Image: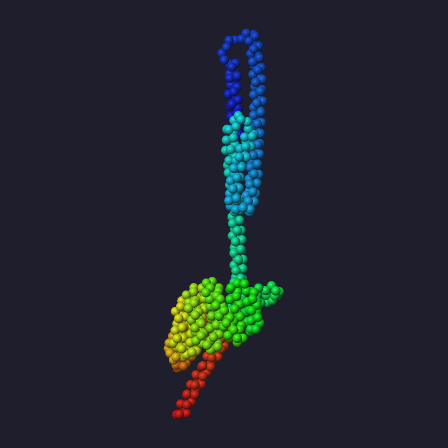
Length: 502
């Protein structure tokens, strides 16, 4: 501001310099009338000087006014910056990152335009460009600072919005996951009954809870899943007639192929438990007839379950060869499947085939079936498939023992312990315990009592750490005690005979 005042004063000095310099030019001494003229000129100079002083005061007032208006402009810019911050926050919550960027660009352009317009409206044309440039040079840094603050605040708001978006997305994903789990649980509970795989205790509890929830509603609102679940609950409670009634109701209200297939499979299971085996087989055959060529995985699973149930029913009826043919059909139709449920059914079919052949005294064929299980699924990592491999090996060992091939049987039992000895799943731990007991019995039979005792000790150690086999644990310990007692009794009897002979 001082520089501006200095420029104006210098301009005034050069403006009046010719007038002030005129009296000192060389001239002849005036006459008396000339003195009057000089007096008049002095009076004019005095008047002009007063006018110039008034102009100077006017310019000072104008400059003060400019200072005040520039201060007003600074205040305006500050208020405008606050306003833009509010706008940015508003649009940050209302729109996306592009909307915020547009607001920032608009703020920058608007601030510059408003500042320029206000400055131009305050100034006259004279010296306007120079003063505008100086004012812009003064205000631009402040504008840049204000815009920088807007950028920072906008960035902070966007970061918070991004964090909130991620949190919201996480909550939504978790909610969808829980919903999917619930739906999968209901689907798994409202399943078709596979008579080769009874429900676990926990599954029975879930079925009971689901049935109680269904019974709290009006029956006229029941859907397929409701009738099917009530049927499963009755089936697990050994109320097979009630279960059959519920499955027939489920069959009547089924509106999709998968529902009908489940209802027919479950209907067959209930009929089989009631001893109505031919009707059960007819229900299973209807599933195969209707959906045997289906390509959808859920329907293929139902066809496999129907065949497995049919094979078990035929075996119960003593129709072993027909049962084996059904198991072969399962392997033939689903042997190349990659879906885990179908692979499990194939493994179970081979194990059941081996067991049926074993009952028929077709020992070599039974061993071949067990070997096929190991060949197909020996490297599997899924617990259900590993359980079938363990069962196949254990059954193979028993068959070898029955054939008098004791050393081979012991080798198979050792393989079971090696493959599954460290498993944590309860079914596999149970298989290992049964295998060790079988190995001990074989060793007893061939007179290797010390080795048998070592196996029994290992089995007792494992059972001592076991907490989830409440029935098997005491049963095996009793069997071990009985074997040792019989052995001691036999040894005592032999010793007595020898003493009497002497």
